[in-house]
Structure formats: structure tokens, C-alpha cells
Amino acid sequence: MRIDTAGWLDAARRVPSPNQDARPPGCRPELIVVHNISLPPGEFGGPHIEALFTNRLDPGAHPYFAGIAGLRVSAHLLIRRDGALVQFVPFGRRAWHAGVSCWRGRPACNDFSVGIELEGTDDRPYGDAQYTRLAAVVTALRRHYPSLTADALAGHCDIAPGRKTDPGPAFDWDRLRALLENGP
Image 1 (cartoon, rainbow, N blue to C red):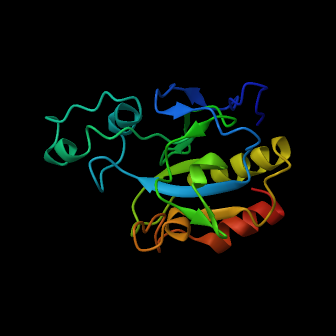
Image 2 (image 1 turned 180 degrees about the horizontal axis):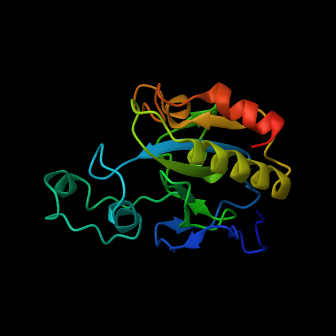
């Protein structure tokens, strides 16, 4: 798995999001943030996550969508339940995934982080394919961006405590760390 000079992962399907911009001068990826998402909540598959991240979510397609259709959000990458990768924003650019956030006293995590969404919920186990792919992506990111150190990995809940809970208690951090140390 490789990242090209434009910041695209060769193993991912590209679905460019308009919800991105340039990182501030001098900022580079220094943190990987793990999120979860399912649309509608608790349902997997379908086109709704891609529609949200590309500003095409139909507010009438599900009652939940009426409250989120106007959001302008994105992530760099989505890992589907089967391990399929969808990339929305090149890693060198700023995706709009973290919102109000702080990591180790440094605010505005979007400026210096990579946002990876796992298709899932806080309370349902993630699949083998997702852990394997996540470990491979983190490894590729660390290889491409030396600024991403081994301890530069957090959940959305860690950078926005009290506001966000993902990836939730169902996410097995020890399993991810073992895959990163020993290979998938």
C-alpha cells in the first residue's frame, strides 16, 4: 500500500470531497484520528456516507438525514465493514473531521491530523477486515509521513472528550497496537 505525491492511497477508491482545504503553512500530518460512522445510525452499506461527505445527502431519504444534510464534513478515508477503502481528501490537505478538538494541548486538530472513519458504531464490534486495513493504512501513513510517530494515534473521543464518543468501547485498541507491532 502506497501514498502518491499528491496524497492519494493507491488501494483506495477516490471520491473527492469539496469539504477540504489547504493545511495552514508549516502544518503536516502529525496525528491519526480514528472515528466511526454509520448512516443511518446503526445501518451499514449503502451510499449515504459518501453522499454526506460530498454534500449530496438527500434529507428526505431517512428521518435522521434532515438534521445532518446541511453539514459540511469529510474525512480523509473511510474503511467499510468489508475492508474496502474510500478516500475523500488527499492526506496532505485538511479534511473537516475533528471539529472543536485538542490533542496534547494543541487545538484545531484538523490542521495537523488525518481522519480515518470506520464504518461502525460505538457499541458493535468492528470486523477483522477493518482492523487489518486500518493497520496497513497507519503503516503506510507512518512510512510516508515521518511526522506521524508511534504514539500519534487517538480516537475522536480523545480529542473531543465530552462531545464525541467514537470509535467507542467496541473498538479494540490493543488489537490495533498488536497488528501495528507484529504486522497484519
